[in-house]
Length: 165
Image (cartoon, rainbow, N blue to C red; front, side):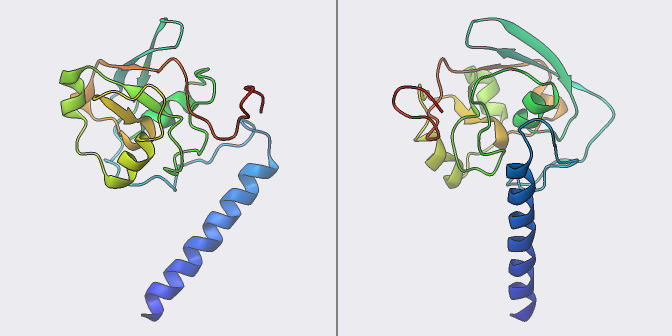
């Protein structure tokens, strides 16, 4: 019991430190070396890259190469892709701004959806039967050549009704 309590205290301190550091520094100026607050297990990294095609809101196809084990949110951040409002909660599974849409065949390869992800997807604008959150999808070689479509809009609770921040 004491070990569990100590682990919880350490996690709270680490989360507090992460929040303090990320809120004190302008977005993009500081990036954690390794995303430590994502949920689920991540496959081991490998030197081989996986090709991912994003279709942005304008219909433009953006092709990038990323490491197995990276989440799709990591890919968007690491490649500095400009998807407005994407990944507002930085992968903590507290929003739906990294909502992506896949074709049926690829969707079946992505693995199971957790209850927590389903709860956040319920808040996503333009939800489809093949919608997932990018922070919850870790790349593997079997996802080579995947196409992920960014929805036309995001539901971001940080914005007011008139669209200003």
